[in-house]
Length: 290
Length: 159
Image (cartoon, rainbow over all chains, first blue to last red; front, side, top):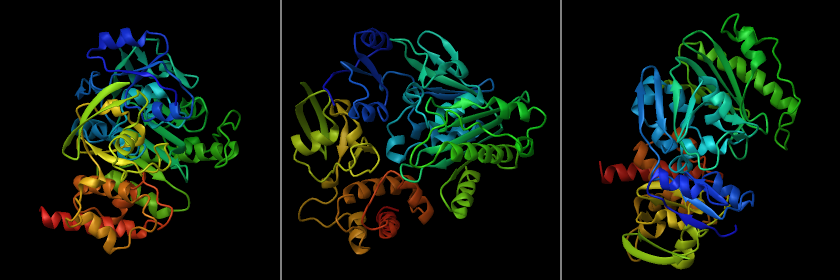
């Protein structure tokens, strides 16, 4: 890793100024960025650490949960307000990375990184979240673009707001080695009845709304509405763990199961791994306990 | 180079580090605390786990400079030379929860974090919580048993 200057500003204004300098990158937990810098994917001249100055507050207000961008995954997963009003999101966040990563990684960092197999971006897209920055509010559907985000230099994420959805579920199938989502599907039926399906892990550009599946669900938010829906294998990720056809099949299976879970008696999060029916049952139990 | 100061295992320390110096490098190479290991160096294996302000974190994926003013606890603090092993370390020995020992300090440090959050966790919880710690010798079975026993012993010690 090339050396850089570490800066620790004391206000968002100072951070914005420093972030506008040539070669500067923002550091908001670093669980993706520092790893990618080791791989040589970034070589910043300076890192502007905003961990201590961005908001961390989590609250429920007027049908939405607002999460400060500095909240760590552990803080989000443990938030009483979130567990009461949007438990599916608390449970999703409780399955990001691992416990040590969750003590360090933040909402803002995860949104800015927009990893190809990210869990948060799928939740933001399916729930219709809004990303709040130092200069504007951006709907999630416009925030994540082509594997990147629309963040401008010097622009800092301050919070995200999530409309509450009671009929919402997330199912992910883990990569057998590194345990990220080989494919994950977030299904939600908003309070106005509009269905949304977001898929993560399947495309290199990151999570996306699956419009064909959503169109099929407008006739009825039920798994059988998706019986004939297939995700085209074109442009899907292929690696040594799964080819495009496998990921396409997974997306269709997980979408049906996520819709069934979201419209059932105990919506939540299920984490699946290779060859284990008991792991499936365990995950359901765990979520029901939330 | 920049100056950094923090508390490590109860002792105030200072050092001059580069921006890119990771916490684990500071602990091992500046302070000589080599009980914390570097395994994968990509945030996956957990051999580098220490506690920062009471929370388990991967010291290969945080900068030393981010720990300015923080309280860091490493494996060395659990049982000073000549003193009895910590109950979690004793459980690892009792249950043969290590072979080569490379992952062990990270396993013990995450085990303490698991015990803090879950008290006396069941087997499924322990296995799920070990997602970020990799052992290539034992197949985890004895590690899981040791963490259950260690957490039980800790709960008895401080009910």
